Structures are given as structure tokens and as C-alpha cells.
Image (cartoon, rainbow, N blue to C red; front, side):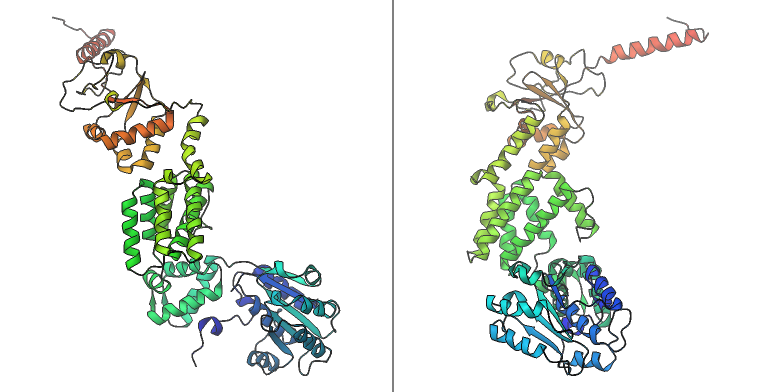
Length: 542
């Protein structure tokens, strides 16, 4: 009969146990020194090696020729324990043997000497399932067992075990296995099984398994049944994953507040039979990764993705604020809870994403905090926020075909060009330009603009801006920037970004730098002539 991989490749010695050195090293040292405790408690999440270590411990205690704390695996007792013929090693499932009578039976057996082995070992799995009466019956024997008896208790929920039991055991905590350790073990198993496993596919399996080696090996087994050449796409199809490209596309849609594109993606995924609950969970994990990038300097050990994916995450994290990320995570977590309770999965997924693209629809505390984060940014900069609005007629209407305007005399001399006059101004344009000062916060405005429109921010990347009263005059050598600003939607995005940074609503217009070219040329010629005379060169003037 075929044996599944997680049973076939169960660790035989402590050195085979992956990702638990804090447990295996201590147990090996105790066995080598002969300091054997009468009761051990192994606690940790599923699939981390608790039962495997308990069985290795039982073999090591009775092995006829142990090697540096590890069982030899070849002696009569090691082979007998492996095939179950040694009756002195008892593995008990507390979930189905949780009554007082079951515990009394164990106590009665413990009073007899081992029939074949040196120690009689009782491995009680899921010990937290024992009843209160069973715990009380076990208490005295657990405190003072016979010299030939060792108890090994294993549980995933240590908080359910009475304190009186905990105080009588030597406790070992099993950690979630790191994705790197899981991926390394998966590659070893795949090589032994004649499978081809890509590195990124191994990391994806490790990420999905959530620190559980058993789950990782089970998924590898399922993938091997699909294809002997296991790639990322094979893992995604086998596990029903959405793939990271969908996560990036949905997040980009949230950043752009593009509800239509997000719903189209959900429609496509739904028809591809993608599980909406799993998609929501992966989005939560994606925003968690963005949060880690946003808050920590070094995230190499925390993110198990390719360099290309890390670059994409870094770009998205730079675009979002921490408040945006926390708000999105909260909304998705709420949607995931509703999906888990049996609500319509697709509808809840769509509602959660619509809330993220239209935060004004949500009235929760987290939504309000996200909406006022814009105002907080202005307050932190010491800017008083003015919420008054300006009518559309007060804003500039850029017309590239308008005649050029005279420039201010006190402005820089380079980059002359013809720029139209903003319409609707209440004072002479020359006066507006003359009083303009360089806007120091312009780079911050472009950074905020990127959250509203990446293409818009790119168009204004190498521009400057000047402030004059109620006007912001934008300086650019590229006329395409003003063509974009002429569009009402783009102009509204720019105005919103300015309001977000400065707390004020400005009128937008072009900026034409001053340029008296003839004066420049004359001054340059005069300077050249003076230099020549000082050098003793005879200069003939007309």
C-alpha cells in the first residue's frame, strides 16, 4: 500500500527534526547525561513535530546502542518500537480516551515492570481533551510515577491544561517552522522521491503551510499526484491559490480607488472557481507583508517571496500610508469573519473591496481614522487646515493656444517658453509671477498625487511649483503636463493632493520664467571684453 509522504518521511532521529533546535538539542543532552525526567510536556501548533519527537524520545530511552542521544534505529528495541511489537510503548489519543476509567487503566498498567524495554513510556496526544476527573486521577501518578515509567504529554492548546499538571512536567515549546527550513526539507524529500521541485514552488508551499511540516508534505504529495515537475503554477492550481499577480492587481485597484477593475478581477476569479474565503485570507496576508515593509528596515527573514515580488511590494508600501494599510487589513478581516460564518462569500468579498475603494461609505472608527489621516499629515506639518472650497470658475482653464505672457523681472533667466495665462485671475499675471516664491512642499504634493494617479504623478515628476497668494504656478519644460492638467479629472486630483499637503485650496496655473535674453547676451559680452582687456589683449571696438 502507498504510504503518504508525511508518514514515510517522519523523522527517525532528533537530527531529522526540522526547525526545533531548542527542543532537540536539550533532549539529546539530557539523554546523554542520564538526566531523565518522569514527565514531559510538548506544546505547539499542529505539524511542528511534537508526536515525532515523543516517539524518538521513547526509542532513545530504550535503545540498546544510542548514538549521541539519538536512537540507533537498528537494534531490536528500535525496530520493535517502529513496527509496534514492543507493548511497553503506548500511544494514547486523549480525544477518544478522555474518561476517568481510561486514566485508571493507565495507572494500573504503570505499576507493572516493562516486559521487554527499559522504560514503560506513555505518549498521551491531545492531552488537553482529558476531562477534569481524568486530570485529577492522573495527578498523583504523574507527580510520583514508578521509576520505570515516563509520561510524554502533547497538546496544541496548553492553556486548557490545569496548572497542577503543568507544574509537574518539564515543558518544551515547539515553534512554527520557518519557511526556509520547510522549503529545505521539501527539496530533500522531492529529491529522494524523484520529483523536480522549483525553489519558488517550495517557498510557496512553505508559505501556505503556515509553519506546519505535515501540511507542507501533504501539499507536496498532492502536487506530485498532479505533475512530477512541480512548479509555482502546479502548486497554485493544486492548492486553489489565486496567485500573487491577482493580489498585486487588486491592491493597485485599491490604491487607484478603481472599483470597476477590482470587481472585474473578482468576476474572473469566481468563474475560475477560486475560493473567495481563501482570496480574502491571502489579501490579509498581503497587506500584512506591506505593513512589515512599511514599519521594518529589514524584512528579508520575514518575507518568503522572490526579489521581483519584494520589489512590487516595496513600491505598493511606499504608495500607501500605514493608516491605509491598517484600515484595509481591518476591513478584510471583518469580511473574512463573515465569510467564515457562512455568509455569501462572493458578496462579502465584493463589499469589503468596495469599502476600500470608497471609504466614505464606511462609518466605523477605523474608517474615520483613515479619512482623517490626511488631515493629520497637514497638522503635523504645522499647517492650519482650511476646508473652504473654490468654485470651478475660480480655477484655471489652461489653453495651450493662448498667447505668451510677459514674465516677472525677479525670476530665474533660463528655460524661456510661451505659457498661457490662467483665466479668471483677479490681478495682473505679471504681479502674480512677481510675488511667487518656490514651493518647498511640492515633492510632498507629488508623493500624495501618486496615491491618486500614478500616471499623473509621473507626468509631473521633474517639475517645480511656486506659490503666489491663492495661486500655485507650475513650472515644467514639458507641455504634455499642462495638457493633462487641462483635463477636469486630472486637475481635481492635483487640487486634492495640494489640499492634502497644505490644507488649502489653491488655483492652479502655469509659470513662465523671466528671460531678458538680449540683456543676458549683452552682459556676457561685456564680461568677456573686460576679461580680455585685463589679460593685455588689444580689443578693437566699433
